[in-house]
Length: 397
Image (cartoon, rainbow, N blue to C red):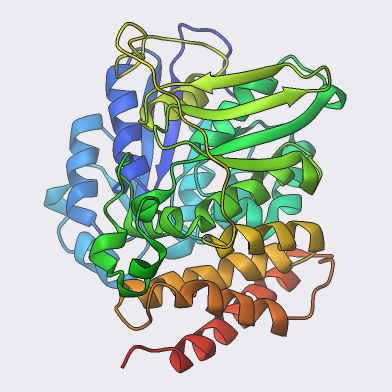
């Protein structure tokens, strides 16, 4: 059980330690060693980096998801601090998620791999800091039910949802008219539409504002990322589909706006760095000096907002449709998008084929309200199969 005493350090397990969220989390922990202690780390396959992190932070519990990488790490025990315990696969992630000494588990693994460890953490009495939006899109009602059942906090790490969390604190839900998430517009926001047919993976992963992994950067360019975030916001904050909106904001300084019934709006502003929401989630409810400097209002600010052209960004339009449909439609949207983005990044389908793959999958699945997690996972696999089939027909020649 986490202590509320500020003198006691909060003990953190970090799943996804070598990605962009993980590296920013390490910066936050390093800056607040008097408040935070890293007790467990995991990654998909970069075990040399995990060994370096374990040495720097004195971590004794390490997980490696990939089977071959796990074997390689086990074969090099001298690379890790003495006494380090190395675990592998999904069972290893679950073992870290239930570490007795942990207070909070931050799940930052890409895609849906983190779902089972997230549920494991909650059932083991840990607070859950969630950076993987796909988990709530896939199985939000089950994750929220687990948090309620075990009386644990669900702390959003994604910058927009963390911003909404901050703006809504202390305000009754009945007074909220709508939540507006901002979108940078991604790498191609200012490209003429006719150029999009020739987009390459190298073009798509150059984000103008944020430093992120390749999958989420492509999602930013299609606005699938914003679509997933709208679905997540609907789930996380108990909103209706028409209460969730998005606007283009090229500066990525305002991360959300919350409009209340009386017409007043609250906005959350900070520089475009993930250290801000990560620190807020890990130290919540306390505040501390940030890793990076605050906005300089003496030099700012040109804050620009534009409506989203859903004809140019069909993935956002599709997200709105699945929000209204409910059931397993959001899970199918997420699964099909993951497959389509992977195919694009591998150079096998063109950029504009991504929404075509997702559209085809959504028209072929039979939607239903899932009664258990196994039915959602089965649908997820079926949607991936259908997406792979459709992508094969759209492959670049």
